[in-house]
Length: 294
Length: 299
Image 1 (cartoon, rainbow over the protein chains, first blue to last red):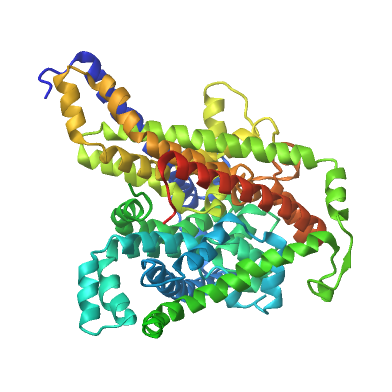
Image 2: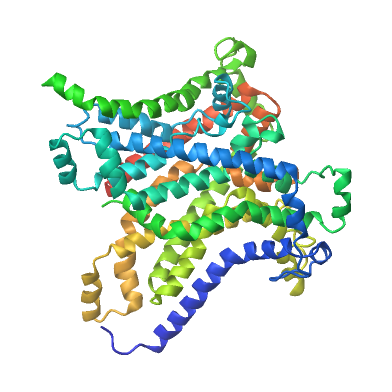
């Protein structure tokens, strides 16, 4: 070990801390600023007075959004999508990853299956033909359009199967000796041994379904069927002048477009901000175990 | 013996049935749908019912005034994202590895991974707000130091830079994960030997840490080759406007507008086929290179 720390090293260490802390603030501050705008009065926001903290603290933007019918109903669609999408994605990922993790002696045509899955990463049908197929199978304007076409995530399957491969084979072999079948081994042995990678895949799946907006935009013909992120995309990004319901006019004076937009952005990010810290310690481990080998 | 083996395998096949079906319908069948690139496609007639016009759609695409501009934008934006998207995480991973204070290190990691998990709808909204020329905080800061406001999202000079830097900003943290894992995998005895030989920290970083990362760097660089035509639809779509089509329109946004807004399905599919084909070649090359160079296999 080095006994004396040189001056140059001390300067470097201090500079390094400062740089990395600044870098992480750079990732956080834009979100903080938008959050502060959402809690500020519209006058302060449009006068550009809001810096890091809210000015004239008010919850009126949130009150206004949370009583909007469209917001609530699009949240309902997203909730359905999360429940259905999450359970379908996770079960299909497990069901695909388990057989694919087997050796050739256990599943003779394994490599054909594997190529069948991998080819979908290499080549894709593209936007228009995919849209046509979704339309031909009658999913347009149903919740299934948001769930079924993306039901198999090959990326998640690969993460899972690489993890499965690293599990000790002896336990499984002794289970087979005792007469257990593949279904039992998958459910009672593989799943309980795979919590870190399952947490990772769960996080990815939930984040995917929460964030996905484009499929909602193209597969839904009526805004009433939009999931929350598509609804937000329409409101926040396509800043078409909103049609105001006369009975909401009273609120307009208090709620400038900017503060409302900010509040919607923040509500759209909120669930991820809540789940993220809990799953963060898992996903780093899950990714490293699942994707980077030797 | 063979019968017994087949019977043993049966549950494994059964497990794969739902996944295989989904992929067949929603991934493989659309590949067949590429035939509409060669048709004057009318949706009501089905995939094979419209008039065949050979390469007509492709000729039409080549005569579009902006097509080369759009291709150029796509390659430029995507390449810059790939280059910076590799360089920044490598640097940050090396620097993060030097942090000894566990809590600060973990805090930094938590914050820099975060933007990766937010969608471009959210981040697009954030960027539109903070970059706004009239009330955005960035332009307020510029004004405070005596500079003029810049219309970042409305000027062709600035728009590609906004795309590139905001993408690096969103993804650099998450990309450090693999590089940090590579550093963690370096044998500690190498450092001990270097210290005995009198190597200082800089030399250790240069002669042990970086060379130890080379396989992962090569891997990530080759695998990103397949993204040369992926300039990031979600991001561009949520940030662009007609005034910056000149510098910011990319293949995917063009396909969307021609196909789903103008309903010229055949033309849009022709561009899509071109993109899918080139990407296929690039990805195949990249996987082959990754296999040859660092013995990488997908599974």
